[in-house]
Length: 256
Image (cartoon, rainbow, N blue to C red; front, side):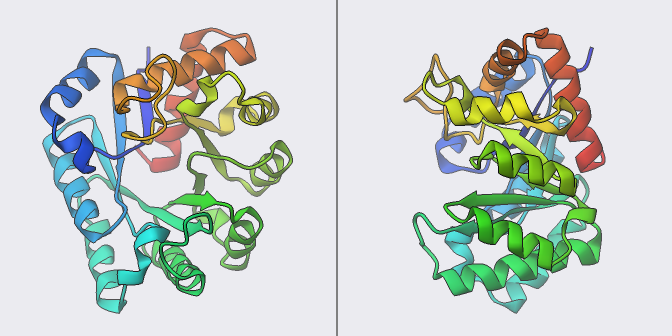
């Protein structure tokens, strides 16, 4: 049977790094077959690439989060391009728009979102999207840049079920985090009920978005099983069915 695939985590985050050996040991002890370790700036992307070489089950994505694009320039983009050609680097991400915090100016977010989409298309890699409080504009830019044929993954999907249906029609994949386990999260439950299982992945976004029963504590990849369990409960199907489907979806999307 296929193992769990955490499609989005941050082993490169300082909160994880302080306990990295124990966390990685729990990855291996808890039925995880693959982990996608996602960069959010140049330093974290470089670390993700190095960690992918260290652990057989670890793969990497490189890119600049919308929070951090205020530090981007053309040389940085070239460095991402070079990193993306390293072994086990399977995607560009996480990239996108965040109009909730606006840590980088919105115009700058738009510019570097588009440039990183174009980079991914140039080198033939799929993209991992961060979208917070920018649902309509994120979809608009993805359409304008013709991003969907190359592979689009909506990380930690937080939009409506109706928009999820639109993404599925466009060929995108949606990733569900541990927040699906929260008792009052009706919106995400509707998405899971609406979207075909062959368009879903599961993730932790560790060290963030910790699922029940560990809510409030540091998240880690081994907790992805709680997301799979909740999806199986919502869909009234076997846990193994969800694990095998989401694993196959992620391997197909990332080319593993």
